[in-house]
Image 1 (cartoon, rainbow, N blue to C red):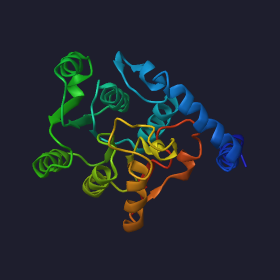
Image 2: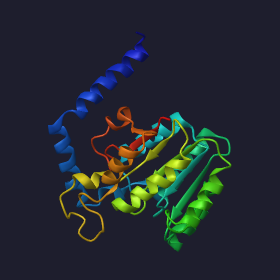
Image 3: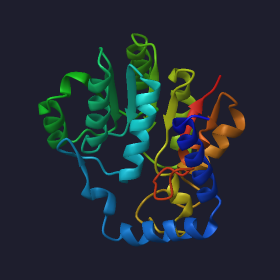
Length: 244
């Protein structure tokens, strides 16, 4: 075995063992809950726009995009636009005519102005409307026909019903070998009623929707090599690869 192969094999063994460490997993979730009191994920930006993600999830998304080399990334949920800018910057690094399509039910004007003024805005198109609205999805599918390799982020409304509907719809456009990236599965591991002002909770969130989706769709599976690296993450089991 050459030194490079040995490095990757040892790393995979370590991450597999880490994922089985229940004490570390509990400490990680406890840390996330404690840090959330200070809105920890709100403290980071990507090329000038708030991205609202754990840094570890940004790194994993970078690995996946670099490996897959999509020419279209579709994102549901825009917020301040940091994730759109991140995806656009990866497209810029990959070269070519790669593009990012963002969908949000309410694109706030102040965010829209900042996104459109960004140097990478030429790689971004935005659609305002519900991600599961039939007309909106028809626009998405029509737009996506121009591209060959498509990756999807689903980060809008986090209820079971909505996320499951998104998974069913947007899985149709994901290319074989590419991914659905599903944040906010961590809700299932936070205390019951932690998000008391939101419509999601333990038992009603992206993780529960994902489990139902995977139980009915054999085209996708959790990428354990990616997920096993993460202990501080918004996306437990949330890196889903299309295999057939």
